[in-house]
Image 1 (cartoon, rainbow, N blue to C red):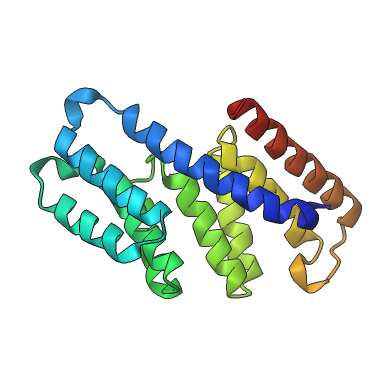
Image 2 (image 1 turned 60 degrees about the vertical axis):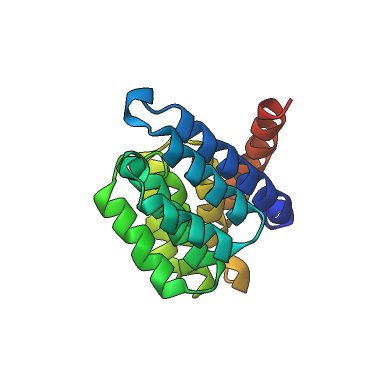
Length: 193
């Protein structure tokens, strides 16, 4: 079931998110990027990935002082929101992800922001809010790597979530969850092969 693949899927999702973040950064128009700002962002991301949230925050604060920081404002906003989320500041993280989506709706980080909002809602047992975010992710970004994760999460919610309620489409939801989990595994195998 999807729940059994969830732990492995979270690791794969995180690895894909890290890779996608770097790819999004390097696919931007080089004329819009300041090498010093990119270096500072990479330092902040490395600190975040290493679990040093204070160092990541300090690196982002230093990045904000650089003249070329505006070229990657959406990515720095995403990383700041992710720091809030990881540090347990759920309400502040929701506000920061919401602001990112409002100010940069076409950002390459928008799908990850929607997934984070959904996970924050699920952790607060707000299944309807999570469903809205997951549907937005799957509808607005159907070809993004996180779209399959969103469909799997939606299937889990249709089943009644982790709390054991069973929805009316249980059999179909379980099938969609299995397919989404396998698709993520196959995609990760192809991506990292």
